Amino acid sequence: MVNLDRDHMENEKDDIQLMRFGSDRQADNNRYARGRKNSGFMRIITAALLVCALLAGWLFGSVFPMPGTAWLRRNARQASTMDASNKIEAALDVMENDWFFGKDIENLDARLNDQALLGIFSNEEDPHTEYMTAEEVSEFRQSIDRNFVGIGVEFISNSGINMVTKVFRGAPAFEAGVQPGDVIEAIDGVSTEGMTSTDIKERVQGEKGTDVTISFRRQGEPVDITITRDEISATAHGFILDEKTGYLQLYQFGTGTAQEIDRYLSEFREADIHKLVIDLRDNGGGYLDALAQVASRFLPGGTLCMKQVYPDGTEESVYAASGFLQDYFGIVILINENSASAAEVFTLAMKEQRKDVTIVGTTSYGKGTVQITRMFNDGSAIKYTTSKWVSPNGVWVNGTGITPDEEVAVPEGVSRMYYGMEDDETYQTDQVSEAVKDVQIALDYLGYAPDRKDGYFSVSTEEALKKFAADKGLDYNGKLTSDLHEAVVSALIMNWSTTHDHDTQLTRAREILNG
Image 1 (cartoon, rainbow, N blue to C red):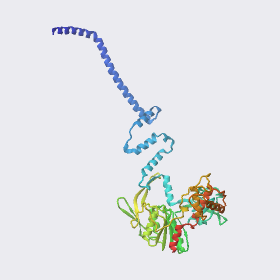
Image 2: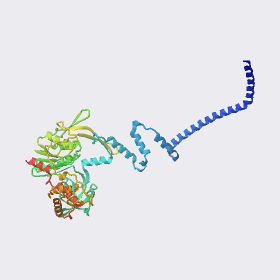
Image 3: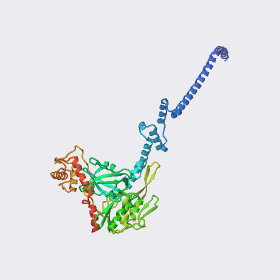
C-alpha cells in the first residue's frame, strides 16, 4: 500500500511538473474553448440575422415586389395550408394572385365572383334558383315584359320574304296603318334583300322619338309608311275570330299585360263578343301581381286565385282585384308543354273558379314554385325559391303539370325538331336520312302528301318535292339540297304563323265554343 502511496507521491510530482509544463497548453485549451463558444454564438447571431433578413425580405417584397424575393413568397404561399373555414375566399385569393392565366383576363375579380356565385346557386333540387349577372337580369326582365323601343310588329322571314304577321294594338305601327300580311321590302331606302331577320330588327328598332320609313308591298302594291319609334310592351295580342268569338294570346304575364289585354277586350266588347279563346301555349309565366291583375278581368273581385305555402307551413293568398270583370259566357284556354308557372296558376284559377272554362291542348310544364329576385347594387341579382303555390282547391302541379280536359296535339310538322343540312349535303331516291324525313313531314303538312314519312327517299317523295319546287319557282335537279330543305321547312313555318288552317287545338276550341 505504501508503495502504492509512494508511487502516488512520485506521480504527483510528475503531475505537478506536468501541470507546470502544461500550463500554456491549458491556456490554449481555454482560449480554444472560449473560441468555440464565441463561434457558436456567432452562428446563432448569423442565423438570427438571416431569419430577420428573410422576414424583412418577405415584408419588403410584399409591399415592393422584387424578383429576388418573389420566389420566397411564392414557395411559402404554396407550402402553406389554407383555412377550410373560408374556402371561397381562399380559392378566390389563389385565382387572383397565383393563377398563371389570371394576368390575361380583364376584370378577373368580377368574373371569379360571378363564377363562384353561379356554382353556389346551381343545384339538382331546384333549377329555378340561380345567380344572374347584370346583363342576365336585364335580359330576364325583358323576356317577361317584352319591352323594347321599336314600332310594334312581329314578322317572319321565309325564302327572302319578310312578312308582318302581327301588329300590336296601340303600337306606333298600328297607329300608322301597318297591316298583317304587309311584306317589308326596304328600310329607310335600303333594300332588305339579303338581310337576315336580325338585320331587319336592328334597323327597325332604334331610339325613342326617331322616325323610320319602311317600304311595304301590300297585295302587290307598294306602300311607304313613316313610323315614329316608341317604347313597346308586347306581351299580349288579340283579334276577332268570328262574329261570336275573340282570340287573346298571352306571351307572358308582364307588368303591363293587364293594360295590353284591355285594348283587345274593349274591341271584343264593342263587337258584342262574349266567347273567348285564351291562348297560353308557350307562355312561360311571369309576375304574380301581373297574374292577379289579368285574372281580375275574368274573375269577380275577391276571388281566390292561388295560395303560396312557405317552408314553415304558413300560407299567403292571392285574390282577384275588384272593378275589372268582363262579361264572357264561354272560355277555352289553350295550353301545351311549355305553358308554365303563372300560366298554370291562371289556368287552374279559371278552371276551378268558373263553370264555363274548358282546357284544350297538351299537358303543361308543371312548375309549382315561386321565386323572388333580390338585387345587388351592381345590377346583378339572385333569384331563389321561397315557396310553392297551390290552386284554390289545393292542387300542386310541380313536376306533373295540368292535364287538359281535351287532349289535342298539333300536327307533327309543327312539333318536330328539324335537323337541317350541310351546304354540300344532298340526297336522292333510295337514300335514307333524317333530313329526308324532315321534308316528308313538312310536305305532308303543306298538302303535297308523299307516301311515307320515315326518311326513305321514295319515288313519291321525289314527285312531291318536284311539285313543291315548281309551285315556288325553285330549281330542282332530282336531289334534296340544303336550300330546298330550308325552303320546305320555311314554308311550313310561314303557313303556321300566318293562317289557322292546321291549328288543330284552336279548331277544337272554336268547335267547343260554337258547339
